[in-house]
Amino acid sequence: MKDAFGAPQSLLVLGGTSEIGLATARRLIARRTRTVWLAGRPSPALEAAAASLRELRTGEDPVTVRTVPFDALEPAAHEEVLGKVFAEGDIDMVLLAFGVLGDQGHDEAAPLAAVRVAQTNYTGAVSAGLTCANALRAQGHGSLVVLSSVAGERARRVNFIYGSSKAGLDAFTQGLGDALHGTGVHVMVVRPGFVRTRMTARLEDGPMATTPEAVAHAIEQGLWRRSETVWVPGALRLVMTVLRHLPRALFRRLPV
View 1 (tube, rainbow, N blue to C red):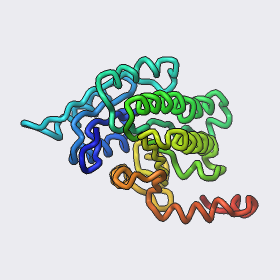
View 2 (cartoon, one colour; view 1 turned 90 degrees about the vertical axis):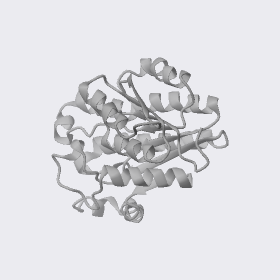
View 3 (cartoon, helix red, strand yellow; view 1 turned 90 degrees about the horizontal axis):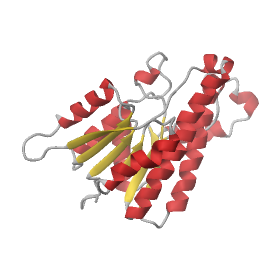
């Protein structure tokens, strides 16, 4: 259960090597989170991520960090794999943090590569999101936090495959939040702009570029406020409101 200050005591990160996911875990462990599950493909990187979190608490108040094999591209296994996590005890917060950027130029010419982006970012997220949502509803409490993107607000020529997958994820999460309203489960969509991570290392910084730590801070604030939508940075909300309503002929000319 969340403590008296609303901080989750248990956390499940889907995408256990995600830099945003790990930054959020570190931030919550510094508060009151005691149990963390990192779900991801088995790898040295996943084990290293778990080890780095275990080092954050020592002595009488250690943090328990466990890994669980999880693959967004294997939705048939999601109920069994994630069900085992919830069977171990209540989960106060689920952070859906997995996703791939893809390579727009390559993926346009290789449809199967584009399909992989869509299956990871949208289909896999729908499966994992519903599995966790049903478990949270059954326990009667908890938060489901989903990392969307401002790229989903309006498709851009430079990354419309990725953007369209995030648009679908965003719409799905909003609908799921409406479906769970009144059940005790809180659903929050997080829409970061350009985040400096390994995934974006080959790209030039976008406008209002941010960091995993800044996104983690915004997530923590959103949990405390029980927000339904969080923009990172907050100024992007106004920017995207303007861009969303620009005529397409004008939007095509913008260097975005």
